[in-house]
Amino acid sequence: MLRKLAGAVIALAICGPLDTARAEVFLENMTSPEVGAAIAEGTRTVIIPTGGTEQNGAVMVLGKHNIRVRALSGRIAEALGDAMVAPVIAYVPEGEIDPPTGHMPFPGSITVPPEIFAANVEWAARSMRQAGFETIVLLGDSGWNQAPMAEVAEKLNREWGGGVLFADAYYDTNAVFAAWLEEQGFERAGVHAGLADTAMMLAVDPGAVRDKGVATEAMGARGVEMFVARTVEQVRAFRGD
Image 1 (cartoon, helix red, strand yellow):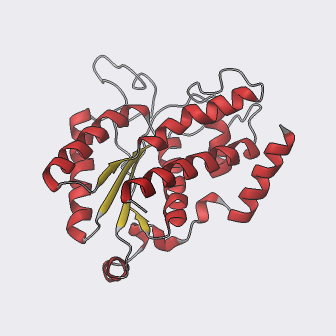
Image 2: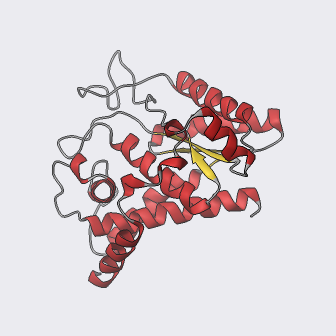
């Protein structure tokens, strides 16, 4: 176990801090002419990440999903080498308001109906296609985002004849990472705001964690590797690379 974790630390050190992915992969950090030039030069894949604002108890901040999905999407774009990352969609389904369900009984959680979330994703995708992107990757860090994103991808692919990938490999990696942690001897690693969540945040943004428990940055670095590798593989397969 220690050898594996040490290797993850080395990999993280080589890659550098997760929040310093080169600025030019983030569309919001670029001017319109810069984006146009990048598309003209071959950057024709864009990632539309979706996060969420939800309670994580006293363990970590409400913006866990937003922070994590932006950092990992940047790493995925860098690994692809010809992709950009659109701004994170932070307002997502988190439960009902009256009566409050899901995360909504807890202060700070923000929810929108699934159909409103889906409309935001759809029009973000339409905007990216209008700009000239040919492959649009939808990926989400929160469980309730998955079905609406899949529906949007299906709808747009019917209309456009393809080009939109719902990258379910990204979210499915949660279970893969939790299983790896459990193989190392940690029980129930995948529970909400549990070991896997905490370790990932330590690797992405340690300042967002209030109670790390037994989680370590090295554990999270291994998770980062899994999320990036599995998603990049799915995108490349979709594009026929």
